[in-house]
Amino acid sequence: MSIYEKILNNNYRKSFAVLIDPDKYDVKGLNLLISSASECSVDFILVGGSLLTYDHLDDTLKTIKGQTDIPVILFPGSILQINEKADALLLLSLISGRNPDLLIGKHVIAAPYLKNSSLEILPTGYMLIESGPITTAQYISNTIPIPRLKDDIAICTAMAGEMLGLRLIYMDAGSGAEWTVSPSMIKKVKENISIPLIVGGGIRTPEQAMVSCKAGADMIVVGNAIEKDYSCLKEIAHAIHSS
Image 1 (tube, helix red, strand yellow):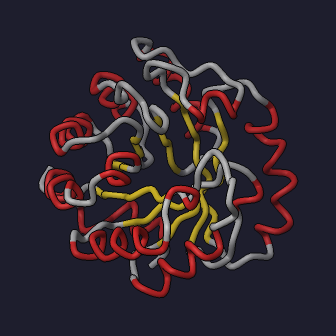
Image 2: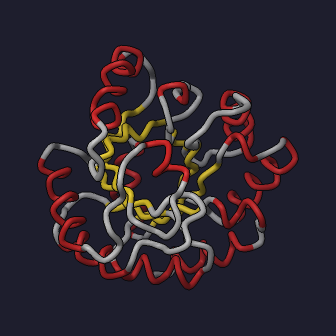
């Protein structure tokens, strides 16, 4: 079964993805996180970040793949974050912004390599959502996020992404977000698209994860919260899988 088919089906339950930023983990911490993720039946591991300061991507992927069968999906912040040790790659088109490099420019550069790689390519409409102070993703992408209370803009953006042939929509409040994507926006976007909806950014508690699931998210992504406390993984996983 392909990664996309697993996202579509996943035993008809919501999916939980852990986001690992290679810059933020040492070997011991990464081993503990992978062990915890396996115990909690995490569905997917996303690997990537806005920056790649220490170039730990290859070692991070080796460690993950050596310890678990959980599918590993690249969540690349740049074309430097492409590596065939992963199973798949979110080919992100930043449809919420108007930066041509992140809509199509970088994709053109990466296309020949991706075409010849073993990675499963997952065309994804990436939407940054206003979440308080400027996040790293907003700063690096040089784009303005969709205003938090403008559900209509989010709906039309997601619909356009699906009509363009993108196979996933990812609404992201950004790493370290003060606010999560609002339940209202999640609900209205999900009602207007027929492809899987991924939601991440600012989700720190089981309650926040459950609210996002009930609003319509098909996959919840959690990163920052688990960097500080692996113990919350079990509670968040339970909240998502029981939604």
